[in-house]
Length: 330
Image 1 (cartoon, rainbow, N blue to C red):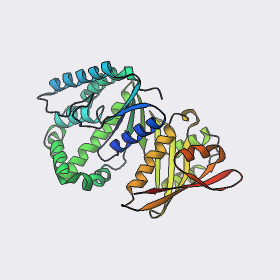
Image 2: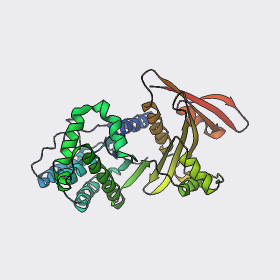
Image 3: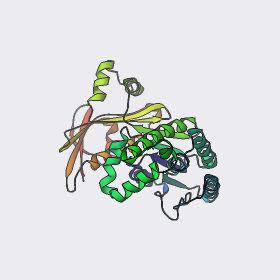
Image 4: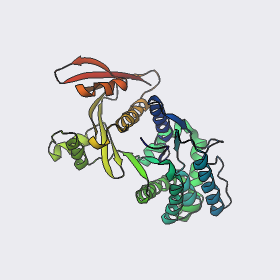
């Protein structure tokens, strides 16, 4: 991985902070020097904790200066892991606060993109399929004061005011439009990026099968395999599918990893490790305190060490594969 800057993006509730911390942890295990900085901290090396700028041009100048200062003083032997500050913060300001259109947002984010190029940045975008579900999942943790504050921010100025949006549903509409704009902007930039989403197509599934030498079932079978998976994630590098992981579960005591494929050209880039850890974090989120769940899989013999490094233990051996399992706790 030849980068000195990884930025995790996505809407609230998508798991940005958890994912950033997980990425930092995995890089540390590989012997990399890592600095992981969450959003909103007072001493952020590339951002401000206080966004109370009087107008957009003042903000733009200050933020771009901050980015330039960070690039000039950054340690080239360190990988920095941030979240929010490349897409979310600029979009919240340009679109939500100042009511600017998508082109204006894109131009501003493009300026930031040019400044950070010396660090060979990678953007990881968590594309949650259901915005309302993502927000509902974090309300209990963040509380009603947080919810009321973000609703007011989004509907009382800029985009929300212009479109006469109100209440919780208005807030959700703001986020849905923001996600569309962010993904469109990301595709226009000269920057390396990955998306993690849950909308795999059978054609992509087939391409991943073929890339590692597996023979493909017929198209209807692949569609059904995707539809009836308990949870299915796909990683795309730009717009090309590079990895998938598909699960079955009783949502009680067991999860079974049924397909886990990393495109041959994308192997040994930590993509598989990140994707597994990302999906394991989802499984952990379904557990209550003191609950345990068993993750089961069958690993081909040449992949045993990969799963062992992820914490799996060998339970039995056949001629061509191992049955492996792992216990995780809530």
